[in-house]
Image (cartoon, rainbow, N blue to C red; front, top):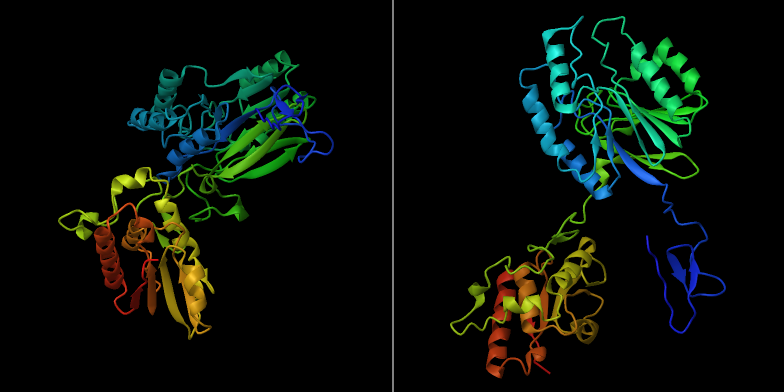
Length: 461
């Protein structure tokens, strides 16, 4: 990150490799170090998708990951519904349409839906799921890798599991392999262990494994239960993470943190000196920069805030044979007047003297002021029995006011009086005849939308 503060005529002072400033004495910022150490990195852990998938959530998780930009994404398994079914290849292909959207590497970990658990023994369905995994993802159903000095160990908890008790723990060959990998990388900054089923934590074999690696720093992640849960075993953190579209437990239909039920991703920051910092991010709370392009709290701007070439209503409806409607859409792209945002201000805030739309005062009449600088000139003319709504902006031309009226400025106000002060800023741009024609059209538009109101057109000054 480059953060430069420059003040003229002062000598530059350099602090660190990237941060520069020119101030002496007390500084208007805190003294903590920048969190940009080259050994610090972020990765994400993606939870279960299946076991009764709720459509649309997993795709949002892909979009969220691309917004957050982790170095890579880990998984904890259960990414397809059933690897033992005849259509398993199609299920993997569908999954790939999601995974291919990611801008960073994705690491698979086998879950009981991916490599089908099956019933007792090696059923044809179970073998089919194993063969397909080998074909699509390679024969290494468990593996390890290093990144920036950290060791990542990915188990296959499905190698010996089936649906019948007694449930076998991770097989001895994987435990021996993992122990060898950890010893081989005894100088690793940290170790991250990934598996699907938390049931392995309860086995005597895993307990023996923990005792052998307890002198090392490590963190464990798993899925399977579709609930977020944190445990501490022998001083080490264990995380069971929830879902990204998988079936919710307990009949819950939305996020319910009482039971650790949430659609989300787990965000891990590997720090230089403090080990990993773990956060769980709800998908319901991570949005792109286009949360909404037209909604406001008091209404809707019917065209987005991106200067479109279209209007909510056809401006030709208000043009005569000489095309003097005074709403030239081409002007809206470069005249320096922020058409849409000023309209949004009115809809959102009300531009109200004496309270917003949600606070209409009982027993008071309502007056709406349209056009240039109407509030300062006209608000004082109305006494305490009136509630004044100012919808004018400095510099308003006829076309500005007319466009906002077409867009719905008056909607919901139900005024008793509308005072219009417009046309003065069209002098020198439009002829006197065009200005009067525009004022007449504007008055007609207002009367069309608030037929019960008294409409006053002020003389041009």
